Length: 172
Image (tube, rainbow, N blue to C red):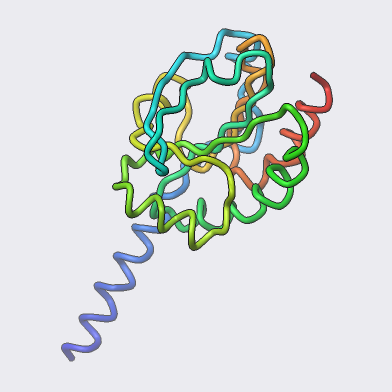
């Protein structure tokens, strides 16, 4: 009987945890165009590697931002595709890609995210306020054009928006 109770508790916890990684909405699979063309909010965050990184560091270059949660299963599943389909595709171009942890994980937990997902791009810490300023959440992609304006803001899970990001970058 104790085992059955434990299984029920663990199942309920697992379902709650996994569903917390998504935000359901009728139009969740459509890009958010309400902020396209608006100036991207500035930020300066600490990198998992210890340095600081600011949006202004990329002036004159397009930037792809992957907003993620350091322990989010969906973010961990999307990260390898973002690495292979975006980071590797644009590694020899002026397009920059960064990840911003919106769950404010520790340096160790974000380093673990990098290690477990194999991403090579810079991961920034304590980005919940940045996500809020961008009007987005974890498991999302945003593209900033070379002039510092929001060119694309995904409303679907990051791995579902990779083609939209590529189209946006190619159109810049």
